[in-house]
Length: 349
Image (cartoon, rainbow, N blue to C red; front, side):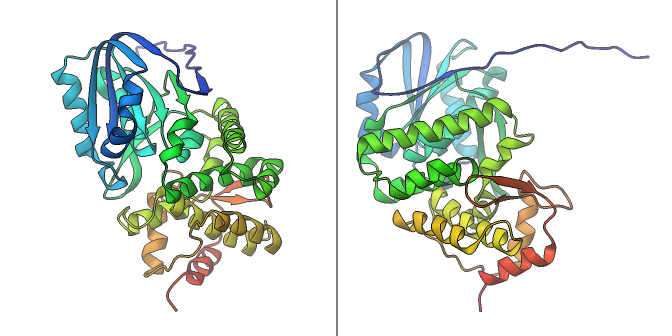
């Protein structure tokens, strides 16, 4: 005996990404702004001057990747319950990628899903984390291993917020921009090699190009069943580095920069990229003082950590490798010998 449930449907989750000075935002519902202590001190007053709502509340979390955890999610949810938010209420993620990911995840599970919008304040979150609907948090096993796909209703990118961004945070965002260019757009990479991102107009153009690249990919593969996984170039290695260092030594983009160099080393070993191309990518990362070296203390432990990556299976590790500059391959067919050779190159002598 069978009972069939017919669930075929078309859901339009399209939304706009606005890159401009933040305009006035009006909401006829309860709204909670989720932010952290650093962003709150710098920009909360500016944001609140732009928002009107039926009720407006602020949830302020500690700042740092180490707080991207279940405890912070609970703090967001507790505030929503205390203020009796309902399914028509709205969350605003106001901060970097950590705040954006956690706010989106809280929105995805509160009363089985409410709306949220992204107002990213770091370069990394403006060009990458705020776009595409990936949400989640970290646990003891790794980065973003608990989460959901939950698209925002809108993204507002205001370059004004970058005026207070520390140099390291800026560089971390550049790493994600470089990632987009190497994997999908050779012309964009060549633009970046000669661009001065300290120029506001040039930077805004780079943000636009990065967002457009990611938007094109997400529109083809929202749930990361294929093409979108290419945006994890540098992340397979980088996530292990972040976990090994307890998310305290490197910013996410810095770990990705190291991961890009490691992925390029693997691509070199496999004949997918030449030495000149790898050197150009490394030089562009170093132009923004991003780290490009790392010492692996325990190569075997580092290798085993790959299997916790969301793209990998029980018996195969998925790597995102550049095909020169401007193209990419997603493969789980890398010989263990090549993997260990690359890891040993970064291991203790």
